[in-house]
Length: 187
Image (cartoon, rainbow, N blue to C red; front, side, top):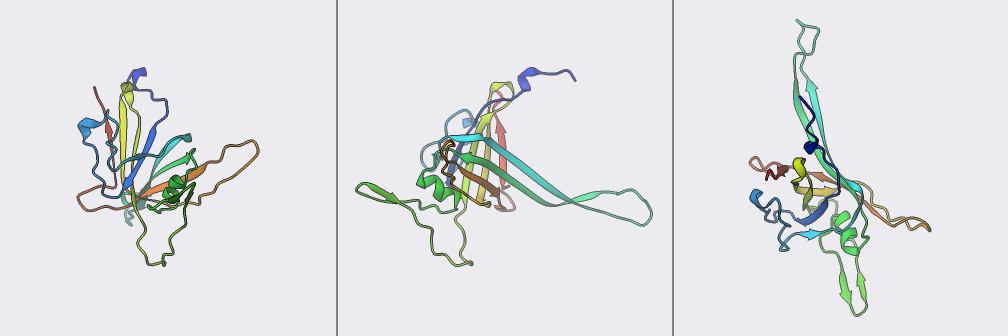
């Protein structure tokens, strides 16, 4: 198969967050910015946005052959990883799975983590990532039920920008709704 240079992808993307269950834009709206109701642009990112899909397969085995006769998928994990370049309280709250970000008053904004018990259901969020697809069109990735699952730190250094590193993991939604979906515009 010859190389089709229009299938090569390079460039940044935009990450949006919404509450779990927020209405997703239709596939025909892949080239439009998500409606402001329910979706918030998290702002600038640094070092890109990476989607990783990890799969674990269990080997089948029989006595009659030495080769592995097959495998079955036993686990799948999809993650979205980035560094949020805008270290706002709202982005800090998102990175720590807390939808209610701040309280405000005259001249201040504040955020505190909730005093949950270990049995409390976490606040799941939904993500939309818009990037470039082949032929220069838009690719939209929906991650429907996510939690931030890795450590979040805020380094303040003399010569470096403060970032919020975040890794969102996709979770099961239902038997009829997959945890993620990818849509490419074709025209």
